[in-house]
Structures are given as structure tokens and as C-alpha cells.
Image 1: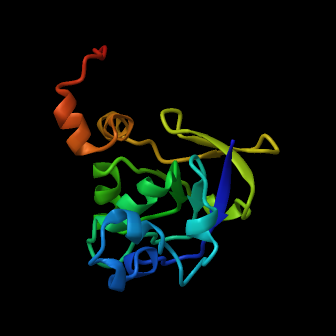
Image 2: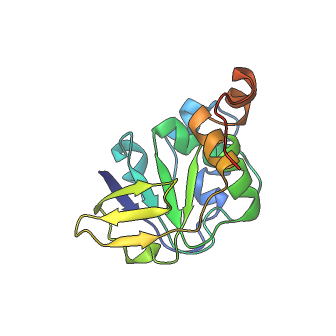
Length: 163
């Protein structure tokens, strides 16, 4: 089970990683993730935790570090009803899983949840299952490889898919 960190709607890339930190390396940037919105986040998040947010997560500038810093902190996934388009692509490119779930905002802060990206479900501790928009297999493969660069370095996929 993963612990949910709940955020509101319209979390932009400047809130995710403040512009003043962009001159530093990813390790330093990660220590400032969401500091204006959730000052307890960077120091309290644990590997495998998830962010649950309202619509339009990741809107704003195209800075890749806004997704990379979450990977650096060990965030397993972000679950929201919608995402900024550039953030969506950057996240998968760096190996961050984004689950699009219309009911994401019903998940409580600190709630224990489980998710199955391939099945497209989020399961609450109560047993209630929330459906997510299916993610194309090539994007899931990219996340499992650790991002686009890691996937390219490892060569072509070895699994075969049946028609």
C-alpha cells in the first residue's frame, strides 16, 4: 500500500520545483519540492508514496525537473483527473507514472491505497476500486524501464505481444 499526499487543483511546475532552485542539481532541487504548497512534503515523503491531486496537475512551464524531482524523492505515481500536456510527456520520459482518474479527489490525505497501472485501477483501503484511464503499453514500458533514456540504453523490448 502507498500513502497518499493530497494536493489541490492547478498545481503548476513552479509550485512543484521553485524557479530559484533551478540553478542547482536534482538532489538539491528535490529538497524544495512543493515547499510553498506542502512544506512537509520533501522531508516526509517516502519511496512508494503517491501524490493525489485535483485537475490540471503540472500546468505551467515545461521544466523536466518538475517530474524528475518526484522520481528522485521516490514518488511511485501521481493520481489526478488531468495533467498539463507538457508535464504528462515529461513525466513518462523520466519514468514517473501518471494515472488519470476522475475520482482522484475523493482520496484522502494520508490514505493507504494500492494501484495497478496495467489494470487501470486504484484500490482504497476500504476495498473500493476507482477506474483510471487506460495507459498505452509503450508508456507503461517506459516507466518500468526507468524512463525513455534508460529504455533506449537497454535496447528493444524483449517481450512479444500477441495480435
